[in-house]
Image (cartoon, rainbow, N blue to C red; front, side, top):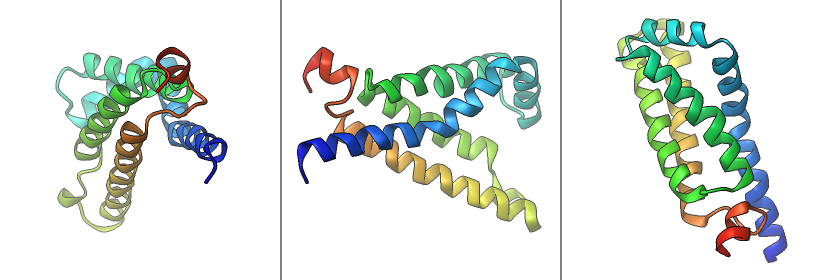
Length: 137
């Protein structure tokens, strides 16, 4: 695979990996009160702080990943965040019926997203990124 195709694929992957988070991070930001209420509903400790963290990670860090800025460390932080949200937001093992099935699917989707983030942490952002421009890596 040529370097150009490889780097273009990494760019496309960064964008596709973050679409979900950018959309929902923006929704959390613009409906912040509802985000705090949702965190309370999940039983999240310190729901206001958790909502702030969710907005920062999903929206702000999502923009960083798309731009390829500080990609490796942010991808690792993101992977830990997604793991936490999998266990807090999708505890399918405590459920039954349709609720269990939907949450099991979302739990394992989170695991797949973690795989993509870890791969991004290993590969880096590629040539079409701010990391490449700033650090030549």
